[in-house]
Image 1 (spheres, one colour):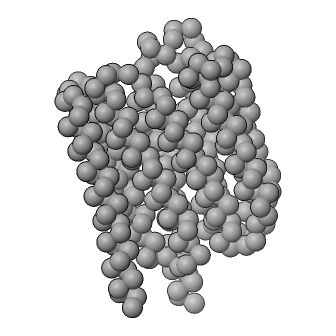
Image 2: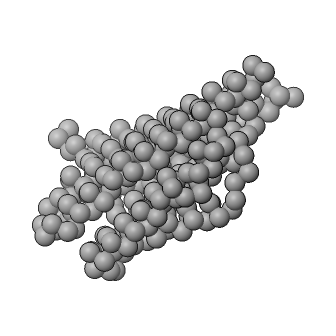
Length: 266
């Protein structure tokens, strides 16, 4: 029975990956050829495939961990899967037109970033009872940060006010995971392995996420205009997504496997 269940899950995963790769081929056929000196386009292609590989890895590894960690790994796989799908579109837009695919990037972030925030709630919930307020505070901070950032980049709001509001949302998230209830639960209730993963995850939120406001500042607040820094902005954002999505998921995978192995050994 267990073997049949695993087989069904593997077939489902195969369907998902085939769909992603088929979409990739369709986008490539519809757009222009990638040029060898188009380093932005190269970064889009490399990262989109890295995201597909990470998706397969996280979904397959759900079979290795105990039940209470499966949701965390599944969410990690969803983050990279959604990001991969949008990267296929973004790289096609870039290669075909040379334009920054801002709207696709924010559609990606409005789905994946809240899922990343959910991971803090999930890994704490795997080891203790966590109040729902932790979840909602993380969601509110995330949405404020993203909506304000998009309004500034898309021109619906002046760049400086949008930047300040977005930074306030980010600061609220940092406060919650360091000094708020989420940080206190981690310090008081989590075992050493979970505490270590939690600290690495929140370090990514501080240092990895810092790449985005730096890119926003250079692109929109220096007076040069985003057009002149388009290539730099896209490369910076693309590299940031490797750290903030794939590496973030790997940290969760590490603690999930470690805690599952400990439980199996008892």
